[in-house]
Length: 128
Image 1 (cartoon, helix red, strand yellow):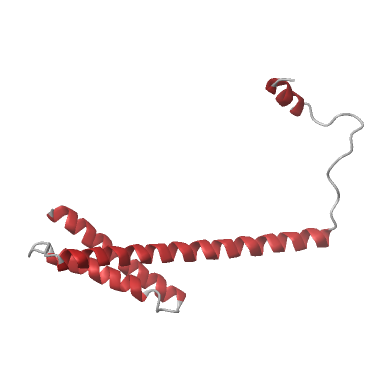
Image 2: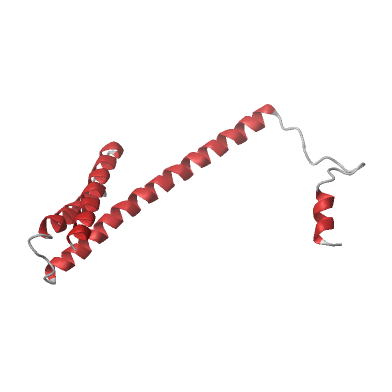
């Protein structure tokens, strides 16, 4: 039997005399299964969004630490200082997202942190 024969056999459908694998499910059982499915999808989405927010905040913090190391090592010039400062403010705001408990405010703080970090990154790239 070749692979082509196997796929051709799959397209033939149900053979005569074979039992149907589908069974009728009572309406209550179906509604309960649908509710369990909705709850699990909601939990998955909530954890995915939380992981995304934490990853973004962590990225802003890491970038601010790298910029702080560049300042300590003497990489700072007058043209780069505003952009470095913006990156450090973005990292500090990224760190603040862990302290804020209100979800909407946390999202706003994270958005401002990303704006400051991206502005600092673009400024550093343009000055260099």
